[in-house]
Image 1 (tube, rainbow, N blue to C red):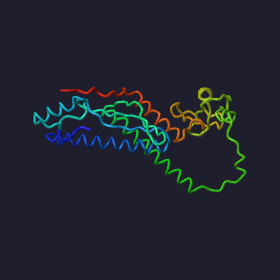
Image 2 (cartoon, rainbow, N blue to C red; image 1 turned 90 degrees about the vertical axis):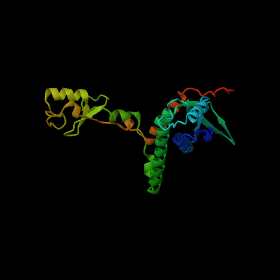
Image 3 (cartoon, one colour; image 1 turned 180 degrees about the horizontal axis):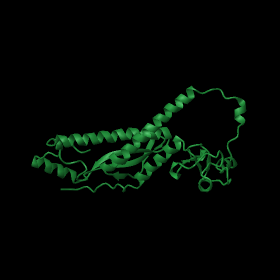
Image 4 (cartoon, rainbow, N blue to C red; image 1 turned 30 degrees about the vertical axis):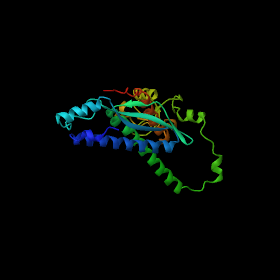
Length: 248
């Protein structure tokens, strides 16, 4: 890690660097907890610095100039290396690292890990509540079959033309039909075909879209998709190659 004795002339820069390291450690804890909850590879991060960084800090020290006005990302001297840790028995194997800027770390990686961790905590709390409120299920409920594809098709059928499509709900009477039947009846009689209530003041933008059971996504699916997007973002980062040793 970068020696802090080179930063005595710029305490504010030193504090910023320490805060960045603390945030990276916090991100590692969040990533470990998310991976432990899902039983998959764990993302870990570490802070690396460019080989030019010691010379830049020496120049700052020589000029007796404070870096408090310069952001940490201004010269791209520091990078956050992201890598995967695969648990394999007692040993851990490290995949090839990807390098991210501190801006990418604070704008994407850290918020995503915090969001995934919060969702996992909420899911655990909900599961614990549901387990505590669990009731005895009668044996006849075990014989209930799962909805078939035919049931889903009947659920999505329009009550007028019997076509399987997305149904629209009228806001004044809550009857559902497809958009084509709505336009047809609204043009011909300006009334609902089921209850004959007037559609004179109902506009197309006032209609509600009726969702079916297939349109509802559970929290586990959302959590899995969020994690996949984070892994995709990390995989698209440039590959990290350590700088060659610079000799003076």
